[in-house]
Image 1 (cartoon, rainbow over the protein chains, first blue to last red):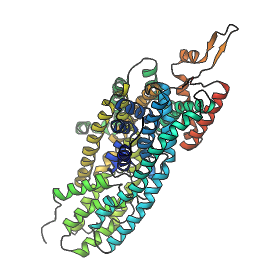
Image 2 (image 1 turned 45 degrees about the horizontal axis):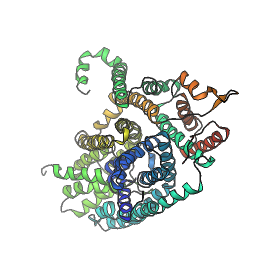
Image 3 (image 1 turned 90 degrees about the vertical axis):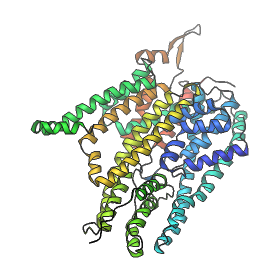
Image 4 (image 1 turned 30 degrees about the horizontal axis):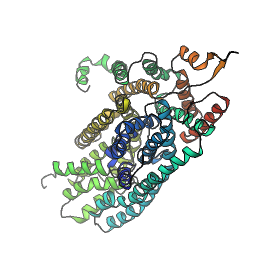
Length: 282
Length: 280
């Protein structure tokens, strides 16, 4: 599997749209096109293998399931994960003859994606720094009361930052990366320590993604129970994700009602009539 | 006194769309969402102060102050300032630069906190979890489900927040920080916890290859089987909890935890605890 110039440029275009801060905007760019699961579909369409793309994307999605960028600090760059990492992982899977649906395929994809995503933070800081240029133009425009210029500053000039830090790096990485993937195959045998470590790391990395999410939910040991409950549903009882969500929804409703009752107890005792009004808000 | 100025639906909608699309397009570490905010206020200021350049400049100047929050939930703040700007244009005396920027600065933090944990940290992972469940075998149904559901939710949710903010002013945020908001947060957090548990059991697989062999070369103790008979997937759960402990209790950054996992993997491979068992 090789990546043509046209394919590489298309990937670069999606990288420009999807990064944080991307030209697709926050909701469509960062939180839709930037998610590895969606990126997998897009890469699959561009490279002509949707099934592999989606499976690679899903595997990487676990690592970045809780990618929050509080106050503009990033630990990984979505454009690099989704539009450099996924295409290269797809090339690697084909080259090494691995099935994307297998645990090993997922581990390889995760290792590749995370490596590229971590290095990709450079692109994030590059874009953000170059945008200072356009913002400088913006401040001058505000001083001169030339407000129409603000649209150019906010929505047009940043494209130049993205050509420099999203499109070109993606094209280069995708074109060069395919050769590197083959070189790795020759240099490092699959049963050697390096490749074994790479695959093992790939299977361990999603734990970090899950843990980042848990960090926001879990304050003490008892808070682990909902997590382990969900884990048990899937691992021991074999319930699939959609059904598990329905079961979880049932508990969520119970907790909502209990909590509301608990919070409103003093008020409800005093004014029972008030309670009827509040029902409408739910 | 002249007739009170009222923002047209058209100007408000344009303002909302400018924010919806442009809130972070020109991001820098220094000004973050400031330019997105300026673009969102421009159609409103244009309409309210048409033909009065000095007033227009004065109003725009207000919004050159730094702004950054969770941009999706933060839409409510833009809506609230739209209402305040309208009040100021009508000569309401208690609305000035200080009130507007005081309010913006005061809401930035709490909205970012709620938005990051509720929208980005819970709603998106739940939707992604369901979508991943629908992607088995590489089916495009999962990503398509996520694209449709998330974008409808984000667009109409943000639109509602904007207009609620405009109509109700600061009352709009009381919902978020009041008791219904707290009950929703608690419920959604539990929902998220359960779904994430199911996601990790389905998609994360940490396995050991460690086994003890008898003299005939048969394995009489396969560690993975023993562990799974205690609690299926226990090794995966332990590693997740280990990572949580390192980040939450030991305050390690995610990058450091990842590097530590590389070390664990390397040592594990050397001692034969981990072995993917692959050949070309």
